[in-house]
Length: 223
Length: 222
Image 1: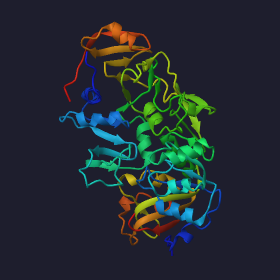
Image 2: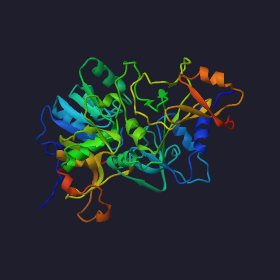
Image 3: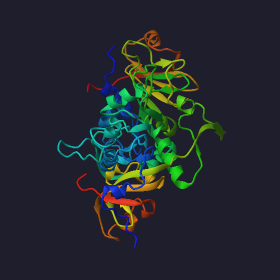
């Protein structure tokens, strides 16, 4: 079985963002999703620092230091886009106006708890940014992550051991081997890689899984 | 006649003192009032409390003030970005205090401070370490955390255009915390790219009405 690459996970998530959606893509890997949104859909990207209708990276030499995304990288504004101040931006987030946000994760529990801002490693000062606001505020909170850590520890768990970002907030997890919904305090597998057995998937997961009756093959084009 | 323009940084910073609390706008380097912060550095004030999204960025402004050990505490959502070793070193040597506040809560606390609101309940941070010790209240079946307002002695804001009444227009995503901070301080000082005549800003386009602004200093080429 061939695990999905980061761009392939991003592509897979992009297929599930519908036409007309307002979406916030978290800093880091979720930013890749913007590259794969289907051309026939109009999807409006929100950036927490006060942008709706955020466009792609500008050509070299056309960067504007006053036009950046949440990751502080230069971006552009699409026709129809708008600027607004931080309190308005977080009213959009906290007031349930965003349809989707996609966040990275260190850990997700079967209750939908999300841990993505701090580990138990205290060698760095803490910092949370807008993660806690997005976790409680968006109508659908999706997680994009590798299924296991670099040293093969499961990230989907009975309970999170790291400090929480939000409690019971995650609706769906897209990993490099499966798509998993969180329903009634349980992980329900919607898609998994072809050629992978349920035992293999269980062994890579730190909590019980339910395989959906309609479980499909997780696939993405070569990217 | 109302004229909020000031001729120099001495006038812009009149009333500043050691131990002052300063709101500093900007998200990363976008909209950061570098020149006002560096004027504070040159005047020598210390033991400052800074309220800002980040604890400095790049080479200018707040990161210099922190590097020169003038800052006792930073209230922020995300302290470390570029040049984070300066923060890291002082944080682990207990030379600087960090209060980490979720970004939306930080902004809303300042809005409350500027709006005469004594506190608010938010779902942000429920069940997390940042809610520890705070009142939690169940409203319509959902838990909310009580957060209190933030105010400051000074707010430093960057704007694109200002008139002598203090009406402001910003530039793109450099607007960020400016309009909220301008409401929430005893004295709001704006560094602006360009002054324009009264009436030159279309009233439908004014982002920060002049009532929130006390002093304006023109700093070209920022």
